[in-house]
Length: 576
Ligand SMILES: *Cc1c(COP(=O)(O)O)cnc(C)c1O
Image 1 (cartoon, rainbow, N blue to C red):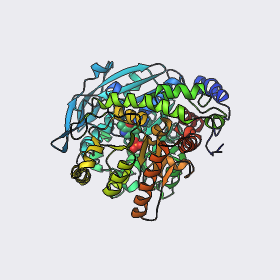
Image 2: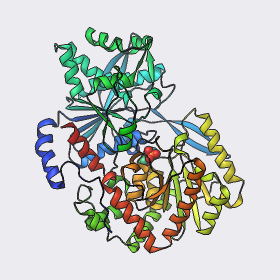
Image 3: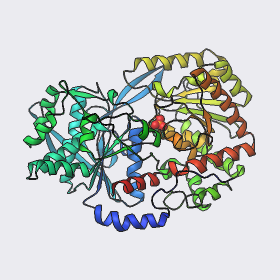
Image 4: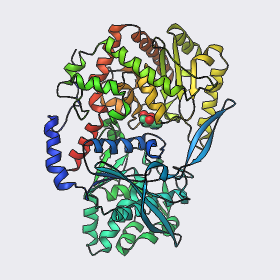
């Protein structure tokens, strides 16, 4: 069985040739050690380095840096170091958040120096800290009262302060480190102020204002993750007077920015569109449907660069080794030129052997992370594990599999299966907290479900990885049209889980018959389909032929999408 996919190596077909090309052309001319690719993000999800994010946006940032390190590309990631972070605790059947202090000294960061920004006419001193990793580094700005990621209201003063600190402080931090940005990638509009700082520097150092705008635009890439522009934060003129204008040197830039207010408010998305000539969305579907308009009313075109993952980080080492030794992935973890032929040779015995190793790894993690009853979980190889692991937000519909608990119960009973649910509610989202409690109550009220459905608190990278490598079937059912890309399903496919999913986000980069698709004209129909798919997935693990059939389909259709090296290559191809 050989599936032809639309997705492979779009610009330069030969992998070696591509790497030769970036070494030759991009790395030596456009990018260099002191003129790196700069990646700006308000959120980084990199727990090994003491920085915990909220979700996919931060995971993407961490994966991008690690992939650049593996490709030996000079990349500097600029982000805040939040001195406190929230963790979810679970006690007496209820979930709540606790705040924890984090000290950057514990994670190998070095203090470079301090820089100042001006807020409310006061000077605020920011520490610039640095950590190097091969050809890449993390430059972070911080101060003891910086607060938590996404604390407070998205249009509030503190959020604006954090964003201004990252942009203006981060831009000065680059100079401290002796770096000039070859390109500025803005990971969402919260990083707009970095491009503004650059524009201000150029315009206040003698460059003609319009030239400065053209120059800044040419070297700025805005990566959008949000579908609806109206949902984005906006700020008042008064807030900008207190936090933004005070940091600008150029009168022309101030004037330019003042003109962007409409009815006394400014939307960061509108100005980011103005300051970035290059614009990307995070999957093919998302780039097509993201509904953004510039200030003249013109619809914005986004280039699709689908998010990939850092395969060596997320995938069980034995599985990566297997892919490499069997001609599926090359040394850069990109699919080989004939990976589809190689995938066709995957067999159930190998899949089960790798899953068994993954299961052992998962059990080691679960040993530290008891479920809602305080039970320490341990699963044998012959037990089927379903998982649902993602932020507890409305559009991802974590409650969907609990719509008909009688059906859910029957599936779990019939197949000696368990269901693991994990995901945090965003602080202050009372509606979703109530929905989580509803699900927990349903589980608690049934004796069978109580011992076969497990909620694990404080969803994080460790759990994400453990479940991907160790579970059998993962469930991803966002409302179609609302997931920008999603990357947990990519971790699952690469780790040989069967994927049950709606056709949305990055999943829609591939054909809808390449995984266990959930669709329907109404939510009731989707729910019915979901239970059928759960039944099918469990049965597939009990039968070598079906297991091979679905695994081959998934790998052939999605490995190029999943590859983070492919993503970085797509960005470099777009930029240079
Ligand atoms: C991979 C990952 C995500 C991304 O999840 P999606 O819902 O697929 O966007 C979020 N949080 C953690 C901890 C992850 O590991």
